[in-house]
Image (cartoon, rainbow, N blue to C red; front, top):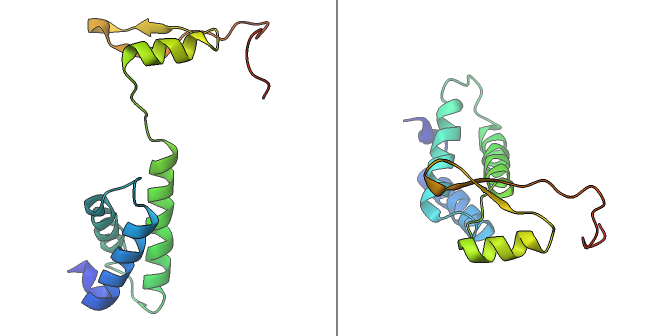
Length: 114
């Protein structure tokens, strides 16, 4: 098993650290999945000395990237009100699902300063 590159206690400490770090962003199961996925990638490594450090870094990079690209779902009315304040609107896709936002007006009047 690729996770044998870390003993059980060390792997549990890594999981516990990352579950605390990503609480409210990623659930414990997702943290466990990413750890397993990363360690599978190191399974063929001939030198294991730095695998724990490299693996933890890789896991954090994956979880951070997922957190940055996380989709926020709002009820339609709240989304419409939020976008209207920025001069934008929702464009419906097939089946009435919102797929994208409208264009920002050229003059950007009424938009908060960046």
